Structure formats: structure tokens, C-alpha cells
Image (tube, rainbow, N blue to C red; front, side, top):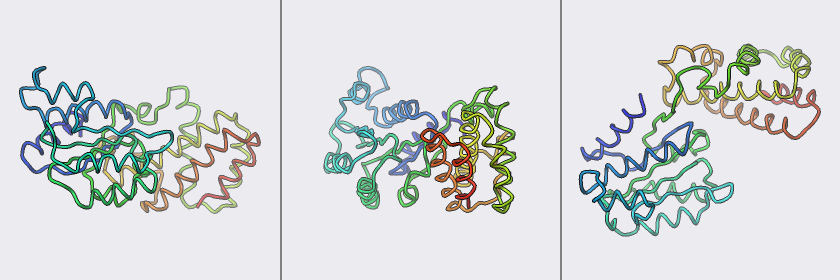
Length: 285
């Protein structure tokens, strides 16, 4: 579904009084998604014709609307106090808008305390309170929050395999085929067989090995998103990637993404490529 179709669908749901109380947007551009959400909030709450005379719209544009709270991470995480501020601020009816609206950017950065407070808030929804969660790491949102949201794939500009993987033509030529072949072998090959690949891979340049692991991680993220949201079924150029991963067990996919995350981080810290590549195959499950 195209971005504009999603926006129109959400706006129409409010006009038809059958809207969800919480929306989760999985996106590849947090800032652009936030701008679109603010536009949705304006159209849902506008008291006029969307012109400059509408106090709701002008205050949303100037970030002074008392009924709209945008939350971003403080440091590396979204803290419990930020969620408590939403709850306390929306304990009364909206001041000038039809709805009290909170927007949480990079919602995957909620720590355990903030996520649990938000979960409790979601479990007792008020009719005039609406939430938008925006994330580029869907698997970073705890399942109990995801299950209470209307989820949309809100990706921008994925018109080619290069856009989807966020790589250029040179990087594609350098590592795509190898990443795809290795991903296929990682499905069910025994460890002793996979270990034979480690020496071949570790001989490559560090940047190339890093790109290889990042592409395999991206393949698994795409597989996860497709299982959850059927996001890529209509894109023929993604078929090979989705088919390269045979498991549909989300718990296994998440574990493998975490392994890849750790290996990618270690590539930036440690010098010995042989040890890192060997560790990858040893940890893989």
C-alpha cells in the first residue's frame, strides 16, 4: 500500500468514527514519518478548512498545541518519566483539539520501565486519546504493545533492490551475491560445513566483511517484516531474498538478527577478523 493511501485510510477511519486508539508505523525514515503523522493529526483535528485560521493546525505547526505530545529518546532511550508525562497530561479532556495525541519516535528505544507503563496505558484506552508509535526497528517493540496497535508498513522510496537494502551499485556488486549464497547455506548446513567458509570470508577486506554481515541482517529483517505485515509480497525483486531464508519462526529470526547485530558491532571494535568470522559460525543457530 502506498504512503498516501495509508494516510487517507487513517484519516478516513477518524471521520467514520472507527479509528484505532494506537497506530504503529514501521518506517525507513523516522523524520519523514513524523511529518506525515503531524499532517494526519492536523487533518483529524482541524476545526476549519485546514487554513491558517485554524488554531489547532497553527499550534501543531508551531509545536505549541497542548493536546499533541511528541516524544523522542533522551540520550539512548525513552524513559519512564516521559511516558508518565503523557499519562498525566492526558488525564483530562483535550483543550483545543478533538483528540489528545501522543507520538513516540523511535519507539523501539522505550526501556523496560517505559514500555511497561505504556502497555498499561494501552490496555485501558480512552476514546479521545490516540497514539502513534514510529520505529525503524519493528522487532524492537515488545509483542504486547504491537498486538494493541494497528500496524502499517510506512517505507519511503523502495523502488529498487538498492533502495530497499540502502546500498549503492558498487556495494551491490561487491557483496550481494555472496550474502545471498551464504544466507541460503545458513539455513540448515551443519556447523563443520559452514566453518569451511570462514577462512574464505575472513580473507576479504574488513569493510567487505562488514557489508556482508549487514546485508544478511537486512535479509532477516525483511523476512521478519514480511511475515508480520506481508510487506514485500508484491515486490518481485525481493523474492530471492525472502526465499533464501526457509524458517518462518519469528523467535529464531529475532535470535539470528541479534547474533548479526553483535558480530557487526564487534567488527568495529576488534582487529582479528578470523576470530570474529569464526565466532559468527559458532554462535549461529
